Image (tube, rainbow, N blue to C red; front, side):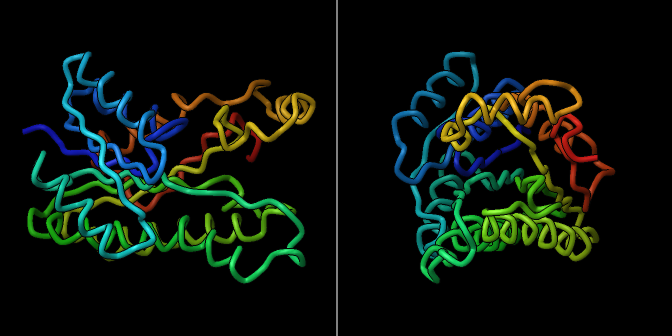
Length: 242
């Protein structure tokens, strides 16, 4: 029986690479998007063109009712979600003292509360089947705080803590929960950085290159395939943080 994989934030970058990787392994892939519809549809068509099965689904993951609808639609198309990849997220850069409460809440809601809602909804069927795999995308800035990214760092650190707690709680039910903490990856989120900034980051990385979304996708496949790994955070950062 093929796995049903739900990838949140699958319109581009890391989410798209992860969706393609699971599609190539024969999984049924549900690609979530919020507002960026066309890239999600294009990725679904690409997976289908390679012989896989995929559909795109819209939802605001900060809204409980929309998360419920997302999972219900996935279940009607593919059956229960057996692999959940929580990738959706946003960033906010600036001085902490300039951040408004609204800014703070938005980052926390999109990056952390959405994972709470998706994990909670996914766990019911997983517990009943005594199996399941949850992969949460954090960041190396969740392992070590970054200046001018206080809310982002706090939300990504929260993801690591949530993943460890769920791994402990759900392990007896055969459910594995792990984290990936990417470093500097060539994604739209980092497109705001100048060429000089990217060159400096490359020089600070022992492997002397910027990561590709596929590097993160390979880590996700490893966490899906290895049945004895849970509660772990895998750094995919080229040695930037050791």
